[in-house]
Image (cartoon, rainbow, N blue to C red; front, side, top):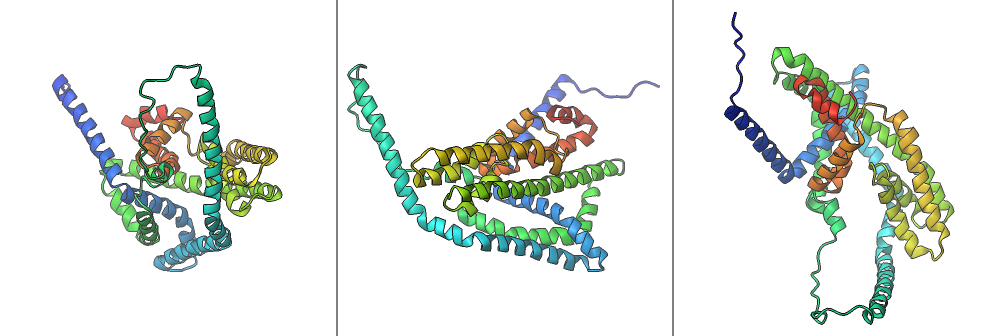
Length: 357
């Protein structure tokens, strides 16, 4: 019997490739312009994956699923409220002291500018001045680039508040309707691919659950190690700076620098000697080393099998697309994409390129 396999002509193959490129560009545009919606859905799905085992446990106690989901969401909100309550006084005091800290930082910056200007003046007698040196410079006051980077995916503080308010409702509905959503998602695939799709979904849910819970435990342990050291050196707002440094240090590669930044800024205003700065730097570096090499492999596990190049590219892409929130979500999103590639035969080479299978 003759082989009936059809081969695409070069023109058809080029057209198919062009369509894939156009589809990828349209998808990126949608993710960028609908970033607040996409980020809200991703965060809600991740939280729902984490809370689902608790809902199943309550169901075994003969509670209806809607009540079990409601109790888990309320319990999570209660824990978050307790954490906010514990640091609220220190956070309010920190906000009240921000103008004083800002004034002190401006004095330091002004001193650096004066020193730089004196160096320029001392070298002007040696180096010839340009002809247009007398042209006045025009400065345009812009919003802080750090605020723009942190809120790029959301847009504004108001949009961020609205997003946070929607997440509990979405998580509750996802947990309540999990069986219907699961069945409906599998029905999108043909019968021969349904089992494969179920394996992919289960792999993604397990990976996200282990990643989020593991990193939460790593952050708590890191905060428990960093905060007492900050308190010993009498760093202001140590109870606030310790957990913040622990959370920021979880970001791959740049976490050490980000974790040092907040306490270093406080120390820059508070201290006039070198020892506290060295203590802060050594503490953050040592705890970050312990977390990345011992705590994370044990608590997070080997589910996120991404190589260093993939993680770097993912952080560059999602950070460019969504700013600070993209840096936080880059690894779990990329790991989920790898889980899809590892379980779909045509995409397995891409999964192997992203990391070990």
